[in-house]
Length: 420
Image (cartoon, rainbow, N blue to C red):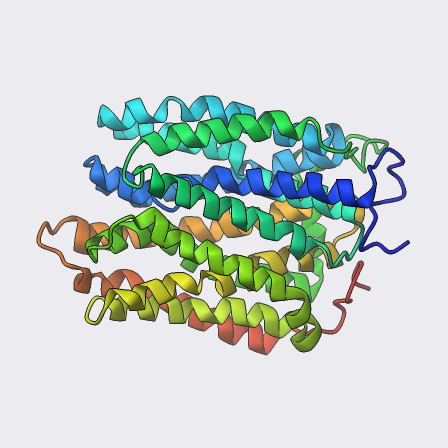
């Protein structure tokens, strides 16, 4: 049987392919519904409640959490606990923490808000990598089904954004309560997913397993190392966008910011479906290059929108599909191709660490510093004054494009399975 239609032969209790796909689709939809309810508009919520000075810090701490936790929980999914159980427990604990954030925001207690966001993200950040690991394990190595399963995660994010916009919660702390409900739902659902037993359960315990350090051996592969370096640089743009896109759209006078931002996720749906065809036509190198390079174009358009029309900013939001899909989704497929099975969960968690942790923390921290020095400290600041915030990610995207073009080689990266 084809790896595209059935899961791993090691799992005799796997359901039939069609039922498996439905279960994985539900997992992805719920997994991305959760962050879709507040990540894109958290900056607007904080600004509305007189906490604009901590916008950059809040996204930076979220990114630091991505550095602290994914490798540890990824190791649990590889060696100690069944991966779906780690996924479920992480979401349930996160849901409890979310319930306390609205009161802290209304009290204006910036320190408590930052602490709650940080601890919540410690539990949430690893779940994307864990979800990817579960999907790849049961779909089979090198499966071409993954983009079609993953597209429902994007639909979940779109649904979340439209829901928050429809409920009028784009700038409200009520969004955190919706997030908590979503976290509890997927937390419980995760325990019903097919058993994903640890690959390394029979191996001797090592502290390297506990901290996820074994995945670092993959950095010896040139293609993997170059990819990780460029992933850090690209996620600087992602961190900047996540932190300041919503308050910037608000500065442009756009209403229903959550609904407008969901256009980006709608475009993801379209471009995810093109991934198999684009990979076949252009290969891994140029597909990833497109996802990296277009970040510069997005920020240029955002800057231009301040002196032209708001629809230019909407176009920039719409480019989210290419920038995200051809970078993050194809990146996860790249990891699946080069990482051995016993390191899959750790390797996927490493990708999340690099994207949502190291790079995003740099992006949100530097952008936050620039914002506080130019926009945050100037009550009369207009949208046209945001250019200093956008220059930084534009430069990062240009540097990334040059590094990727010069140093990444397609050879050694197979069309399916592990690299030689």
